[in-house]
Image 1 (cartoon, rainbow, N blue to C red):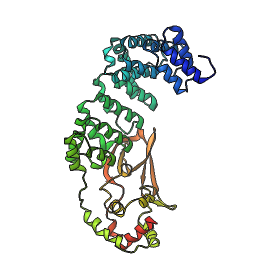
Image 2 (tube, rainbow, N blue to C red):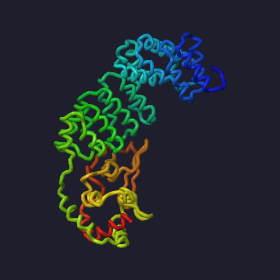
Image 3 (cartoon, rainbow, N blue to C red):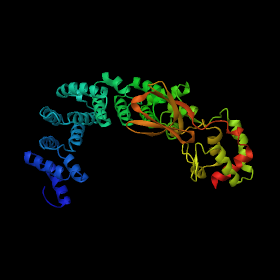
Image 4 (cartoon, helix red, strand yellow):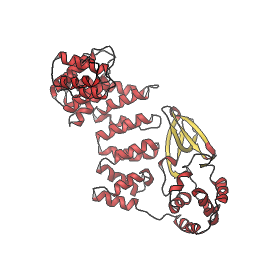
Length: 421
């Protein structure tokens, strides 16, 4: 175990893992501490046979510093679901100090057990431990000033508890919580898999920021019953079609369920919109000779407030440089019918503050403490999460409709020549 060659130590760890006894566990624990950053040594220690793994955990518990292997070991023990090994770990946790990461270890043990089709509730001793952990987790989530990391740990504990705390997880899907906390809550909601959660998530979609909403839709797409609920909501126009990304729509169009596939084709197949006639009319601009220099003037007059090109304008909307890789018709739709296909990061949001003010724009940045809304002209508003009362998507693009009123066919031809130059 003390050999200077890491390859030799790796081979030794693999061999020791097949043995048992206190001396072997002690050796593996020392190796895991010395080579904490080496993934192969970690793999060898985590591959130790059942009775050895719990002994290694005991040895690591007695070290003066927190081992990075506590949680992975707990997950492995849970995933193997050797009852004697799980019981041994639970007994170890009874004898830990107050600063030991019991919550994190129990959370990982629970995750491992779930992966094997079991639950913490199958073990009376675990249920006893969880009572206090759940109560503490709920208190953590109610306190002000708790770090995002601590809140995520608390969320994971609630995820291992009974579904009576499922409503607590749904209540975390609010803008006052960080993206990480909301995504952690979504992960646990998904694990519970209750049909009632689908409707709650669907109703919440307009109130989620793009990054959180993307994760929420992924959660909804995991179960056929949830997918059907989502598609029915779109069919009834209770949910915006664009809240399902283009990639997700393509997946649903090829879904193995005939029912889902049929409904997806009905909802996501190309359809005419009220502005389709305008788009069709402007296709004729492609036949005209465009002047890139004049197109630059069109860009400066109508586009720089939200788009940037060559050092001019503001990056509120998509980078116009990407137009070079697009065909004229798809670009035309984005210009003249911007609400037909709305990119998630470029839709308009309304944020209502606790002081009664409402700020609008697209969410250009998110952090643990707040978010930034961007508007035409490069105007940005920094908003602290603690000051947010509500957030909701308008279901519309920041790109305004009606540009045909100021850009005629020839000007569109010139603009296209400029964008492609």
